[in-house]
Length: 543
Image 1 (cartoon, rainbow, N blue to C red):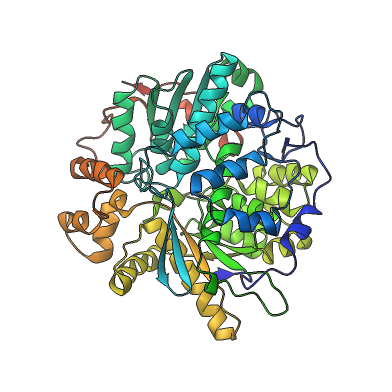
Image 2 (cartoon, helix red, strand yellow):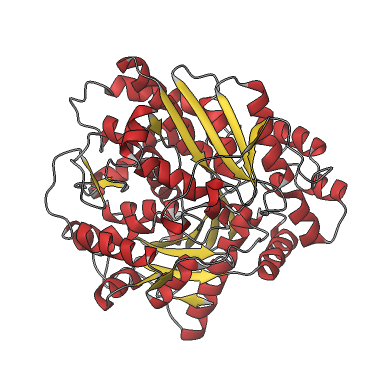
């Protein structure tokens, strides 16, 4: 299924989006629910969620001038990251100086396996993959998480404070967050993840988390008999309880955190600026070179960052690619989002989410910064479902197309891409590539002008060997051999060693994976409260 018009921008994105916002306090962040005071960069980072339970969004965004965009073409990824982040940090911020930021960013990417940090790989003349997975856990989340972990550690040392991070993961976020903060002073992290059999989490993804939990004293892991949406219930309730959050100094490193949002904006600029110039053909009557970005979507954080990149003036349209858990696609296609959808286990487990919580950021931007409208939609969703008004649907339609890709097409895309150009996609990136190919087919049928497409490359395929084996109809050893490149990549080699140890399934019912300090079992108090809240971990099996 495909929806939307990813064929070009209707007018200047900087003008179209900036006019949606009243001038806000310089270098501040506001809650999309409108019930909290504007926060500085440092406050927003430490808070995670705003005090009113909303997510932060920049109060005002200055468009990037053509001269600045041209100057950015020669920057490395770390230098570009600095330049983008500096636009959202007050010049006189006492907590994060330009020198502090340079040190944070330099340290963040020092453990990556590729000197370029992010690489562009052509699949055809009009389709490129932006490889975002060269970090320690081979997931795109290492980029934002590495910067966030060091930013938090810097702020906590400066303020002589401590922080407890609560994280829910459907697969990649957990290992990336644990790796980013392991051993950092002033930070404890507690990660909840869905156990094998309750989700499609891969054995390698689980082993990455249990390995770090056993090795680092500030890292704690809890297995959950439920989906990623299920485990979000107690986490959301903890963050919405302001007194509880203050008492326990709770913070977040999920895509809700503004550092994750801002670093994901960098991907868009960096990849766009590295497209071959001949690929960026301006539309008729315009000198602006444009591109489409296919975004594999789970919680919607990358999509929200894409809207912010548009707001900053980057001439792109977005293509939201979902798997069978297509709540975000249905929202864009029909204007409706229903609560209590059942999560399906798919070949792309990190996208197995039916409540894409960054949707409130998307709707805040699409409504022109109308926090009251966002509160109303959130209440409607809690009561069963929301329906967007026509003007908001139209605003989204011209900026964001969408497509849903099932497992059969995902596996076929992995196989055919490898056969055609010798490149092995992970299943999440394959969803994005398949969506891009669907959109290209629609353009061809309608005789519309083709636009170059970037697909955000989510992870390395060595993390998903059972899926590789299914796509190629081969044995596990053959799947490992297929997924083991590139040679000499230290992060791929390290995860490859874990892959050889990983086992599918558990040896017995009720088993607690080594490294888990507790397991939340079905029917216990943590499941209470429905979509709007949860309970504690009463009755959790501890280890």
